[in-house]
Length: 474
View: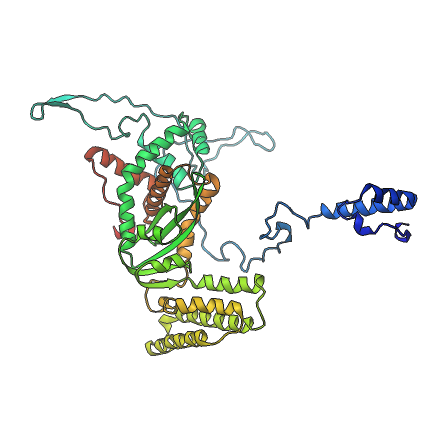
């Protein structure tokens, strides 16, 4: 019906409901069919405006969730392969309680049972009901004739003046700075499960005191990082007192050092690299790392692969781009394949192929590429020409920066829960305790037990023991 009506007012006037009073009256004067047609047209426009294609809540630079393609299926079936030896919980070495169980009647028919001598053994491990232990310390004060003053022995179960013990202190800090639990969650665990009443403010003040004690370990981690043969670096955003700061991460297989700073540039790096780095620095292509004086560099090749893929999908490259991308992918792929089969090749063959990679890279850099994206990447390759294949020349240097990205990931998850820190002091405490707990775990030590023992020694001797070495080193 409506499609056969000719309106004197164009349908464009209906779009966005911009009709004036005179235009609406003109449609009304045309009769019932014109009014019905106009209402149907407006209803259609409202339905389109409410359709999923319009999503004000989705940022302009992001793809709506419902438009993203489905995840690719797994290449391999999850779980162990057929024939793989099973894995189960080991039999406990210590038995605390013993219990016997015997049925009175058959659970199926309710009949009487004839007793037999057959038994089976089953082990269960559980956590008993937890009740806080309260210790009354009677501290004797005796007179020292030589010093002419009264002295007393230290109490190694808690910090001076604290009513909460070391286990509460270290466990709560580990839950927050290592596992990423929020303050409110930790308070609930202690108040309801562990039956120990604590407050958020009391926890924070204890953590500040713990940071002061463990700061010596934090400095040891930094010094060991500067002495590493290979060191990974990465950074991510971090909020401090409502302002954008940056969380820097420097990691090796045996340590992780976090630093929160206002700068994402060379000023922050100068605070960490106070001397020339004698090892190999492994990073992405963030330009701030260029200011670091170091013996060698390895740029992350995975970032180059990602750049090629993003250019393919989102940057509308020209007709000359595919040839450049194919050539660069093949060059990087050949370098990685050569690295993987290094032990299988004769030394002469490996050296020849290694030199050929440098020649191919130089040829790519010297070529006059017509595509703008290709010229942009050529500038990056020219700047880091000597930093792309370091992993082929030095042992223990990978071709990617995945270690730093995996090391910084726990802090990123923690950031989603806590949204950063409220003060500069909180940011300093965050960096110190995250570094200590992460490093102890990397070295194969129990972070809670090791930290408690170190603080006990500190309270008795006044000096923190050295940072524990990796467990494999004895």
